Length: 574
Image 1 (cartoon, rainbow, N blue to C red):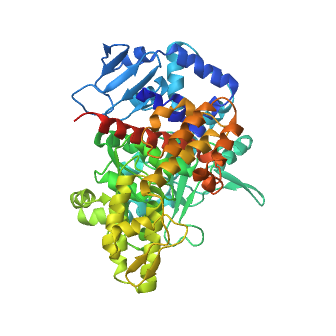
Image 2: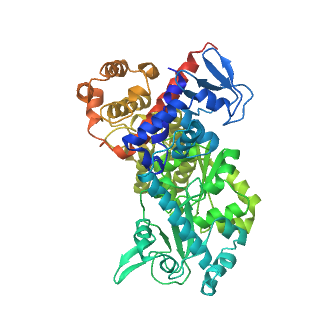
Image 3: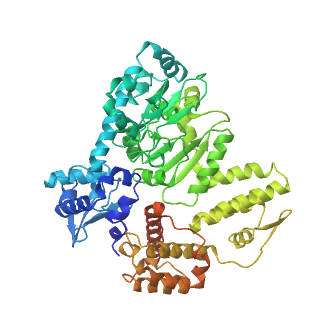
């Protein structure tokens, strides 16, 4: 299978964070037809060749990859399949994906850009107009908030930003900070437009009529990668009384917190240059670090870093470094992050923590950017960081607490699909808990917990190997995606040959039979699963979730391609 076939237009785009929001206007039949016309008119060889020098090799074209530094060409363009793929950095996709990456555009922007070049105008109306309206209203609101920051009554807000937060006026201007003075919105618009502002979370219904959602708060625009504002964060002043310290705009069709990272519009160039990104917890952490010269920095919007965020960052970075406050809240955030990402090897995640009670914007002002960068360079891979937390706690607890820690450790370990990462994590666990590593591995994936007696751990019963469990889970996920009746279908992204890494003859046979059902409906494939004891036992344990399907499908393709590549490399005579 051609490597580029692992990343088709649907898998690359529908798993992109915010795809549904940024391109909701493309959901109708009319827009899908328009998009396909644009694709057919945009020959990938011509589009890529206009931007980088291509050299013909057989049926394909090769070049030095524009997305990473290299001396030998590993970037391939397949003219027949209209796909590109880089063997060095694993970037790949269709002509839309190339324009997304090369021109730094969203998917919708890339399609519109190529449509304009091809002289195929986008159909008017629909959600596209609604999206444009969102941008316009948020721009108007941002302008009103920034103007309000200069008012006499906004003096406490200016003092907070300049004296307490010690931000430079240029930083305040660059991030578009403002002040939600009472009446800033209502006084500036006609009554006929109030419903529009309500739709995007700037006004709300209250007793006596419409009122402003944000009042007497420092206003922070929340922007897309393109720089367009779609929402706001509001920070109350110290001593302001009741109400939350931070208040975000309500979510709407073009703003979902789990899909947007604060500061990405400002940090994008630095991230692409350094190929790594620092993730912090808050708005002001981002602004303080950016001001101090740590430019490749972003923050989630008051939530934990999500899987969607990680996918988003993987488009532009090769490494994520997460910094945590040293207090208990920071430790809890570490636990949440580990629970979500320790099992994903798509993008290396490292971590480091600050002294207890300190947050990044305070600490960098005290120690300076050089000391902060030195601490960042000492960040360790997330599994090692988490293992270090267990190591620090295990000596401070009694037997019952030790048992609880061991159970938590195993809960994390059993969700790690990568055999090498799991082996390393178990080695750390064996050292921390003074256990035999093989015994720990054998008892890890059972329904029963490990039975602890002092410093010994007894195996409850024989289990499958770690490798076998990983293979079973991959095939189980394949079967779930195969039978859910949704598109794109796994058979359009993978072939049976991609599963050459499977060591179980039963699973190999199942995969082959699964492909034989292609095009014959989901029921036949589902019957195959239920007749296979190795899979049927676990079939009903995990509910289907159509919302996460694009992400799950991309994860499956990523894992299969990586394991398949290992097999091909090991098969090459040395």
